[in-house]
Length: 77
Image: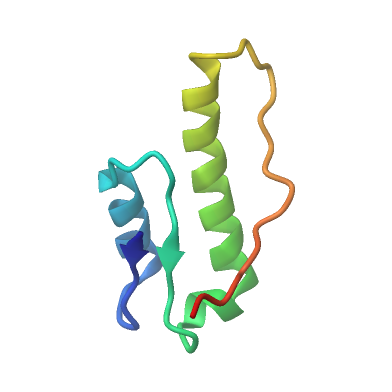
């Protein structure tokens, strides 16, 4: 799980994702983080995940297209 702090920008989050070595990436945002409420920022994150996922899947399956159709914001207790 990647802990996102209130002061982290979209660039900081992408750097954290790139540095993550875990198989599953979970981002833990504070509820009031501005990126959660910004459509453009969520699109940037979605595209970043899509690119990473595509690169990993191409090693297993010969895919021509890899598309994330849903990015869900879920609250964990």
